[in-house]
Length: 256
Image (cartoon, rainbow, N blue to C red; front, side, top):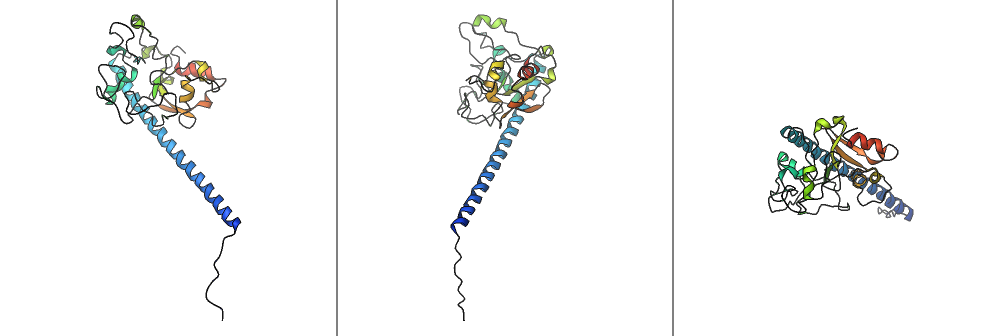
């Protein structure tokens, strides 16, 4: 009569290796899938921020006879007080009241309660704004801003107090093909989106290549808010290369 005890079944080395390989592959697939879902979520949140900024811009334009806010974000360099006046506050400082964001009254580039800092992302903050970017956001902050307008649409070319009177805000009525123009988009710099063609080249190792870096923030793409209110995900590789100049003119040149 045979014993009822069964001999333990042992895995062979090959079976163990195959099992480990399968588990590793599944782990990579799962991790990649979760990362992809997270990236999509961050991109969707960013698009939501831009839509809110679009609505705030529309309200601002209605109250300012169609004139766009300037991208200025620096204090007066020497003498006088014109630069630090309300007229020359940074673009995001000007839009803050329409978004329920507090702002300083003494320095017109700071957001949040007067004399205090912001400790978490706000509507001006892209949730995918990474620590490895040239200008990361470190909390607490007074300027947690991840977006910027084009310098062609929102001038910043002022270096002294004596030049402030020469700065002219652009009116939307002056912009050709307005619905197809980008107002603000992802940027590593809160004040300006430098769009010179040289700095849009993918291979250019330029520290100030704001557009190149920004339009790869969301899985090789960037989000942009157009004047007609829609937000679009733009893959960088789709705009770089031989058609670069056309895209720059089409999206950012008010006279094109």
